[in-house]
Image 1 (spheres, helix red, strand yellow):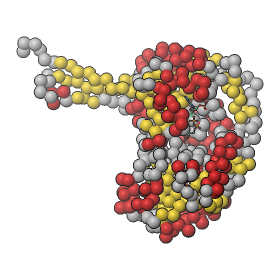
Image 2 (cartoon, protein in one colour):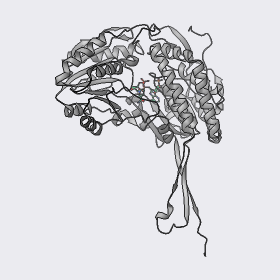
Image 3 (tube, protein in one colour):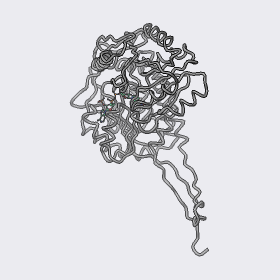
Image 4 (spheres, helix red, strand yellow):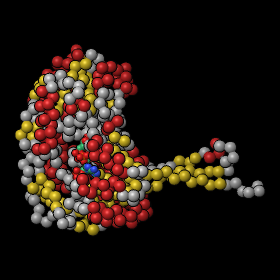
Length: 482
Ligand code: NAP
C-alpha cells in the first residue's frame, strides 16, 4: 500500500467531506506515511450531530428486514475485500498480518450476529392485574431506539471494536457517529464505506476523524447525544463520565488481567495460552495477560517453560507471515513501557527475559519478584510485559488478583472443579476463563468489566440492550358503569 495523494474524507450525514487540517497516518514499524485523514473540528461534529437528528427517524423507521439486509451485505462486502481490510489493520496499527486477518474474520461475525440479533429485540407482556384494582388492565413493554449514539474507539482493534458499536446501533434502529482513534482511523473509514455501499441510508452513520482532545467534548456533552459508547483507557473514560452529564454510557476500559496456575494444571496448556495471551497485539489488548500467579509446587517449571517459549517469539516485520509480534503503536508508548520495566527492576524486580527496545519495538518481557507498589503491579502495562509470581495456593492468588482497581477477565488453570468454582465465585471480574488465559472472547458473549475496567457490557445483544429504552404500554379495558 502506498501513500495516497488525495486525502481520505470523513462522512457527515451522507456527504464525504475534507477539512482544512489533516492528520498523517503512519506505520509504527518504520514511520512511513500510509495516508492522511481530516482533522475534524467542533463545527464538523456539530454538523454531524445535526444531520444525525434526521438519521434518528430514518434509522428507527427502517424495517427490521432492511436492517438485517444492510448488516449482512456489509459483512459480504468486507468478506470480498478481506485482504484489503487486513492489510489496513496491520499497517496502521500494531498487529501482524496474521493477527489482522483474525480481526477481519471477527468483524464479519460481529456484523452477522448483529443482523441475527435485530430479529430478537423483543419486549414482554406485563401482569398488571397482580396489583389489586388493575384487573382490567393489560399491556406490555417494548424496546425503542435511544437516538444518537456517540461511539469513541481505541487503536488496538481498529475494525472490530468499531463494528461492536455500529452493528448493534443499526440493528436496534439508532443513528451513530463514530470517532476512531487518531492513530488508526483507516480501518474505521473502510468499515463505514462498506455500510454505505451496502445501502445504509447515509444520515444514519457519520464518521469524524480528529483529536479526542479537540472534538471529544462536543461528542460527549452535546444534549442531543443520548448514549456514549466508549472503549479506551481508564483516564479518558473517567474524564468522559465526569463531563457527559445524565446520559446513557457504556465504558469498556482497560485491565491488567490475572491468570492463576494451580499445581494440578496442565502446564503445557497453561504456558501455551498464557504466552499468546500476553503478547498478542504486542500486549496492547484489554484482555492481555499481565499478572500470572503460580502455585509454589509448579512455579519454577512453569516460569522456565514460559521464558523458554517467550524467547522463541519472532518479533519483526508485521507483514511477514512468520512474525509473531510486531511493534507497539508508537515509540512513545514503547518508551513508557521501557521506563515502567526499568523502574520495577530498580525497585527490586528480577528481569527474566526481554527488556530491550528498538524504536517502537519492545521485546517480550518477563519479570518476577515485583514489589506490590510499583506501577507494573497496579496499572495496565498495555505492552508485551508479564509478571510471574509464586503463591502459596488459590486463596492468595485470588487476593492478589483482586488487589488492583481493574477487573475485566481472569483465567485459571486447574483440573479441580471445587477450586475452579471457588475462583469463579471470588474473582472480581466480568469473566472467568477455566483452563484458558484471560485473553478469550467470542463476539456474542457479554463482555465488560467491574471496578476501573468499566461499566456496561458489549457483545451485540448486550450492546443493543444499552442502546435501547423500554416503553411501557397499558390498556385500561374497564368500562365505566359496567
Ligand atoms: P484512549 O487514549 O483512552 O483513547 C480512546 C479513544 O478516546 C480515542 O479515540 C481517543 O482519541 C478518545 N479520547 C481520548 N480522550 C478523550 C476525551 N477526553 N474525550 C473524548 N474522547 C477522548 O485509549 P487508547 O490508547 O486508544 O486504547 C487503549 C485503551 O483502551 C487501553 O486502556 C485498553 O485496555 C482499552 N481497551 C478496552 C477494551 C474493552 O473492551 N474493555 C477494548 C480495547 C481497548 P485520540 O485517539 O484522538 O486520543
